[in-house]
Image 1 (spheres, helix red, strand yellow):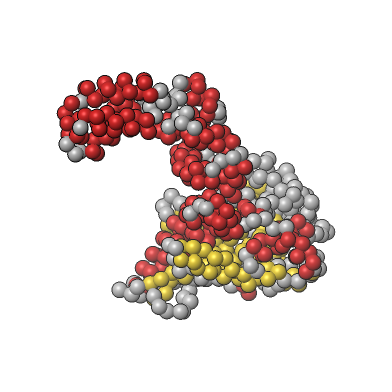
Image 2 (cartoon, rainbow, N blue to C red):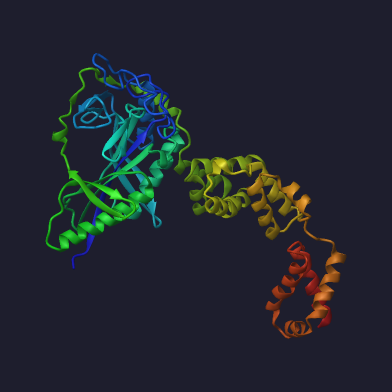
Length: 479
């Protein structure tokens, strides 16, 4: 059997967080929440005699993305009409860019299994989004609130050779868009959509075989599952003596299978031609320089700073900077006086565990960064031990109450009174003569047994350091 490798390219459609639509003044709203057809006008509903006007903020946001993806920002831009039927785009064509896109010839570096791979970016171009259909049996309802919303399409080269690379590329691109503030990354609301172009070829070959395109993948998980299935399907087709057909595919998340939607069009089928209502757009270099100077710190730069400035491991720094909100939470905790490594341990450990368990985003976490620092300081001061601290943290996560208040209200302060602990140690030694004899005979691993007995008696509140030293002193005296 021939061994195959995939060839994957991704088209990513990102709605831009502008105030108004791409070619009219209608406000951009959450299409999953707003009443249908309430933010529309003669322009975005394609009434006769109306004229589009380019949204300057959308162009600025697109330039930001192009710069972050190491693209050339092209001075000369043309908006074209892309002709094919959209049941939810009233004009019957889409205004897009093709021959003269805003940004081109960039790249994005990703890391997979410790190795860096460079994925080429063919172009990033502006266009308008379509509306939304809701199918109701034999008829459909059309909501045009989303029609005309600025959309940035980012097209990669077919440089990805595994599903893992496609996933890493998707996650990093999403992070960059969120860091730039041009897209909020909530894929459940359709503001970020993936289309995967996939083919397979014999390992070692450089040919590009017939590809298929999987449309409208609304989550990274769906993209991964659809890509895995389509790779396996194409390999089976080639192995059985068939040929893969160029076609547009959908993905059924319930069955986990791709299915044919239509035969794939070529660019000629779209009949691109310059939109006669929109003159060419010229972008001045001075404006690009201003935008470049205003770019925020992006994930790679932030990760490197976390390593050099805070002495974190590369793994911790990567985890903390992949999500902008997590990175901001972490840095807010440091601003509140937290130790970099201690805060990193709590965020990547207990905080992530409870967030995943309750399916809560960091923006909705009730524990403020300053409250986390307060908890860490209680541990450092010996007021509570690390075991109790985890219980306190869980209570903070549930209620939002401060660490000190929870410790006081529940009587969780660590027991460090030497006299009280010594009496308890004496009682444990007297109650376990066999274990004492074995310990004195060389089974020093039994120390954990004795400490555990004290912890059980004190509900985990005994100061483990003091208890350990007391046991050692007592056993040395018995030798």
